[in-house]
Length: 219
Ligand code: SF4
Image (cartoon, rainbow, N blue to C red; front, side):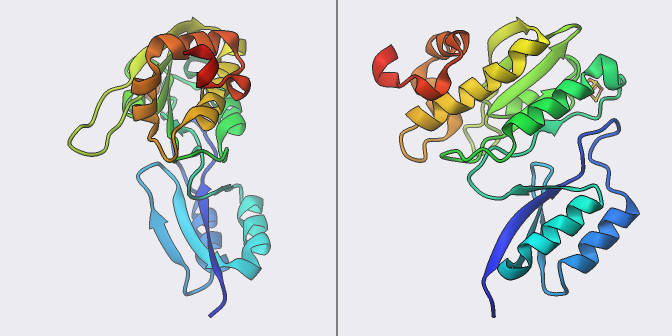
């Protein structure tokens, strides 16, 4: 048997939520081959195990059907967004798509989940994610350190509030960069937040230079 690889497949971020078309499901069911393992993950991606030698052709076909394909494993997952029930504009669909483009697939010490909610009702559960974004009328709040797993599950804490559209994406990428540089081995993001403290993370986000800031310098 040839070597296998895993890819993560998701529908585009859109009004209505994680919607697949029948055509997309048909393409996925045929192109990946009869022996592929297909797994629904808790973070709105479908993991598909496929032959390594067919990877490029399969990815190509899936993308042509309108599906999005990301790396699986230790990366920032594609944005776990809400259903935008308040409409694309009011719930911030465009910025959510841009944010997804900026973060999905970044290699990280442990998998990072970023949640996005288009209003304070937060039906995508952003406070249970490593990083949560909540749109509040015309601005954005960022929460960090949520962890839905285990008996010590915890809610994310407010890190910064009232960011505008141009501040939001750099703030999130700064956080991820900073985590990449300063995590101790495979330290979970929620533990990392507790160790570094919210105050220090705030100053890192304000400096906007996570990839170049090492904890040795800011302690
Ligand atoms: S978070 Fe708000 S805008 Fe998004 S689906 Fe839930 S209620 Fe609708």
